[in-house]
Length: 387
Image 1 (cartoon, rainbow, N blue to C red):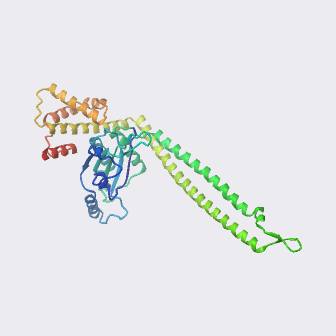
Image 2: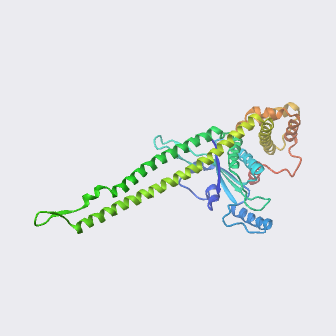
Image 3: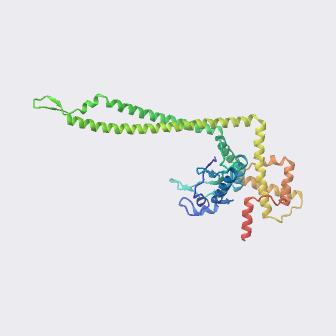
């Protein structure tokens, strides 16, 4: 299953939709309880904070056409977890300075198949982001390859099919096919247009001349009737010419837009090829990518251990065997819940220092009280307080 992530300017009613503050006719209310929500700050409050920081940092007001808060819809699986999405948010901040402050998982949207009447769910998540560059106070500026990188991050963090260079080639071929089809349509229009122009000057117009016999029986042109025929015909021809010219201009514009798009896709494919080639040929780059992935896996495991410690604060582990068994149980659960291959944990456990740190975390919890809480832990703590 493929995933994708695309950021656009956040809409004014984003929170109403995302947090289900009103009912919508395209959702199943019985599935709404399966949705998951996390919010660090409201959009209005974040925008105010961004505007204030921009003024302090740059000495100027935020531009009116700026998009300081953006929202992405991410395609997910039925079992995608909030932990995975938070891990994606962490990658976006670390590598692209994009700070996510709202995450919502929707499992209540979809449609019924017209033929089978079967429910077809549309599993997705909404990521609302702060798009401000903290170094300048202005909005972040990204290049096209950064947006390609976002797709890679989403696929890696959510353990879904990632975009590859051949996918870009397929998209390229699809656009090329569209251009070819538009060009064929354009050719037909041009032929029709030229045919009508030549028709105006052809002998067909002789048929518009009205002749009637006079009292001697000679055929003479009736000027008034002939002029009316010409006027009527010219109006019809002009209308057809105008319509064809409008269609012609529209087709030319579409071809230009598609040509621009295909050039962009060619660059994207080239970047994919370069990246794949670099990963395959450059050991340092491959090692760096591998380390980045394993760090994210370790981060997910540590969060899960903290959550388990919170659920069982008085858990006593008396010997090393119990410690190993408890860690193995958590690893199995994290692997299953987050679709992380067991081999990835095997790579982490090759480092004895990391294993020791995980054992310490499992046995004693966080000794550093300044350690930020995982969002699942926060939610669990709130539920405990309500009880």
